[in-house]
Image (cartoon, rainbow over the protein chains, first blue to last red):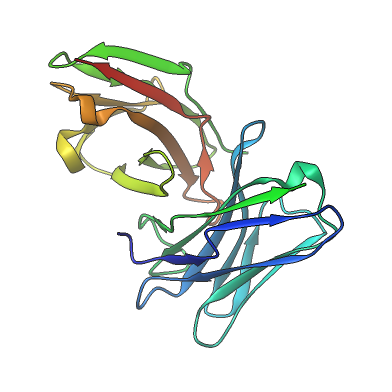
Length: 114
Length: 114
């Protein structure tokens, strides 16, 4: 168990809908990262937050947004969902902002868009 | 831009034999290199990392990796494979001069047969 929790575990929804994925980092970790894992795109970095502020952006669609709250949990919002958004979404956390420390991954949320 | 290549989609090895999972990288600065393992329906688990220093890095579960700067490689190795090592392995790189983005390779499925 990495100490990173994600809810829900599974999410099934329809095209055009909006969903929110939630992540709680390991105790004491200030950085939260979001990744998308799909069969065609592999594992891709989406976005990073550090202590409530956005720090880095990867291949995140404009329909997607995220935030980190004062208690350090993070939410990833996906809107106007398309079939191609079906994927496994991982949250990871690490202690510091600019660090070579490893990231600890949660179990993921499997999103299915029908 | 940073990138990682895992040239083998699958590696097959007999239990008790040594295993190697290959990884090559490309960065503009100094690389921070990581290996993660993913078991079915689980998140990624950290195995080991190279930051600086000794080119041979030892990690969890008897795994080790050899950093080769001239060949820009970071191959994962284990002297004696176990059936329980069967999983999906990811190599990842972070460019020390390019922020926090962790770039993953496409993954290599390791199959260890009894």
